[in-house]
Image 1 (cartoon, rainbow, N blue to C red):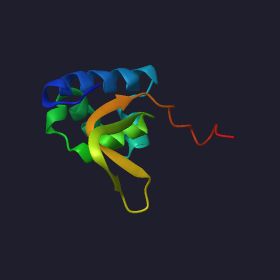
Image 2 (image 1 turned 45 degrees about the vertical axis):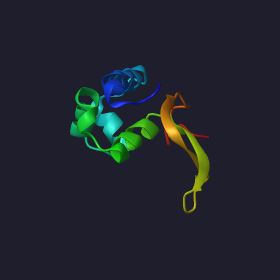
Image 3 (image 1 turned 120 degrees about the vertical axis):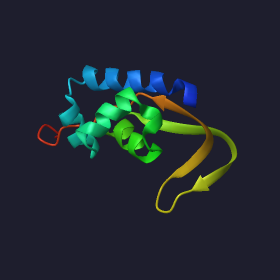
Length: 103
């Protein structure tokens, strides 16, 4: 999914669908994603008013990832793997394991 200002409502729908697919309430998702339940509500209804950083917490907490493509240079974040910058897209990932059930 290419993320633009116009596609944010579709992003919100997909995030809500993924949360529901995982059978998480807003409160449960908030705990997993380290955000508030009211942020989950806002992200699912008016994502254009949310910060990118908090949206990333939600995306990653749901076991998804965002990838930025298109720039010709590779940026190395301090202590992180290389990040290619450009057009962001969402890719489904493996949902986070519950600590109680992890091997």
